[in-house]
Structures are given as structure tokens and as C-alpha cells.
Image 1 (tube, rainbow, N blue to C red):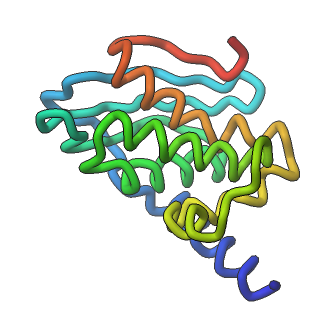
Image 2 (image 1 turned 90 degrees about the vertical axis):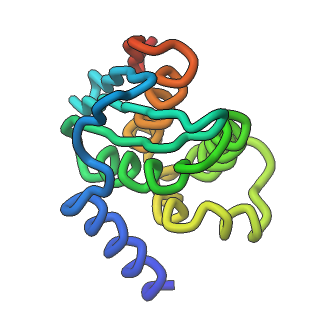
Length: 153
């Protein structure tokens, strides 16, 4: 189990130090701001649609390692997906990090890919907000462009 823990740490640190899809997105179809006042995390998510699918997703902002790594992994995981697929993936991810609801079957965890590295935050309830901030902000960018979301509202 220590090897798995070490691998997860490496994945998180890599995404934190070298976030994927970081920066503005010219010609975005939607965007939203997210803020976690308890931790100080701030994220701005931009989306560009390709029909009913996410053609491109980028983020900007600053935050803790968990918040930044989660946003980076999220942008990679949702590209090319429909809104319904994004919602389903977020539901699985939320179950993984909160431990609420029925346990995810191994194939659902495998489907989350690198995001499974964030499973350990469920032991730290305050950190769950760090891990899910980008996801809530993505939902707002898709459903209510220009919205501002907070982990405390």
C-alpha cells in the first residue's frame, strides 16, 4: 500500500507543480469563478463547446496543492465529454472524495484515472472542498456562465 500512496503523492505533486490546461481560453463559451474562503483557493474555469461536448477546458487561479492538482486533472478528464457525462464523472469523483453513498466499484474508480489519487482527502473533510472546487466551478461555467461559486454557500 505504501507504493500506491507514493504513486498518488507523485501524481498530485506533478499536477500541482505542472498544471495541465492552465491559462486563459480565448473565445470561451462560458466561464465561472470559484472561491474557497476557508483555504484561500481561487479558480477561474473557462469552457469552449464543440456542439454538445466540451471542446476545451482551461483554468486559472491559485490555491493549495489539492485544489490545483484537482483542477488540472479535471480539465484532462472532461475534455470531449457531454454535460451529462461531466455530471456523471463529477458524481463518481464526489463519492470517491467524500466517502458518502455506496462505495464505488473498482471499475468506477479505475474510470476516474489519475483523479483516484485524491481519494485520501476523504479523511480530511476540510480538504474535500479543495478537491471539489474546480468541479463546482466547471458546472457553473456550463450552466450559468459568469457565475461566482463558493464552497461556503
